[in-house]
Image (cartoon, rainbow, N blue to C red; front, side, top):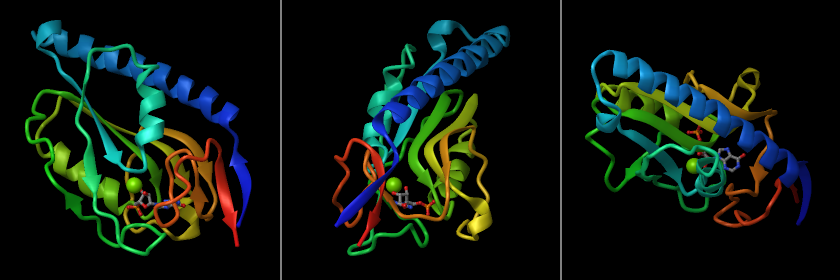
Length: 188
Ligand code: IMP
Ligand code: MG
């Protein structure tokens, strides 16, 4: 197995820090707008929803650049045994938050590929009428490659990549390689 590095750890760290700053300032803007509609700072909730397992490392680094009081409510998407590729129709495993009305919600995922996972979650959470709803993905595969089956608005993207299967920094191939510190492409 050979891995060629696509995005190294230093570029990842720099970009994640930038994303955290941008997210923080956007959250603060949304909260002050809600305050002008008579909601106290104390009543406002920020809920971060990491999509496990792929986003765990990205999320861990990202939240340390978002110095805002928040709760973290992970959602697990069922993975398909033996498959390496994306969800052919996403299935949620276990509970999802159902109390997001009025909350500022940030969904965090590793990669936007077919768009099925994030399309489903965006609809599910939007239906609860949150005060704000945004999505941050570390990676986004090129829509022009034809892999996207559902167009999904994503407010924050770390890196746009081509139609390649990537591993590392949380992303797996058959459950392995999530612990690689850089994002790489597997060459067999
Ligand atoms: P979707 O196809 O946009 O629904 O993406 C579903 C999930 O497939 C992502 O959250 C990843 O966990 C996984 N996935 C998609 N592309 C890759 C890849 O290149 N490497 C590793 N996992 C991927
Ligand atoms: Mg995933």
